[in-house]
Length: 161
Image 1 (cartoon, rainbow, N blue to C red):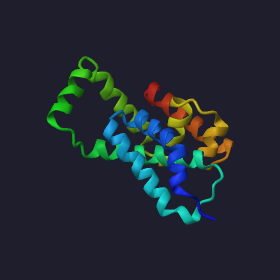
Image 2 (image 1 turned 180 degrees about the vertical axis):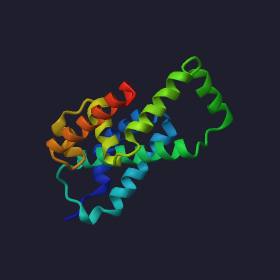
Image 3 (image 1 turned 90 degrees about the horizontal axis):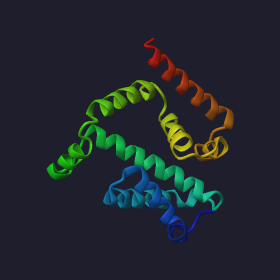
Image 4 (image 1 turned 135 degrees about the vertical axis):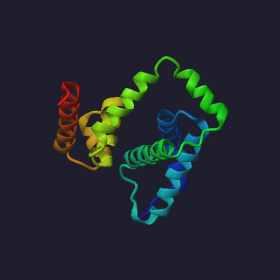
């Protein structure tokens, strides 16, 4: 069938940009990520139909941003001034942030990437189980199972097992 990417950009561009801003915080990175989302859609234009475009774009934006965050974590490219601002902003919370990073690494380390997306959509963004399931192309029971597994992993870590 195919979709008109220009129409999607006009209609859903602001939603995609809001999502990218929310996840990446940095305005320029959010704008770049939004462009990446629509480039991906453009490449797959012929394979897509115009049903549930907002869900698809939201999911693609989330995945693009998660990939950028992973890359940023592996290869930080902050200029010295941005790095200094980050250090100042987090002064006094270094231990808490390090503990949080360590905890997240242990919880998500062996999980599929989609589990992080599910956690982000449901727990952080407040989507219902049904909305989350639709966004990640899974059943509600599959989403529920992943969330239960995450909670169990967190409980084990908190108990020191």
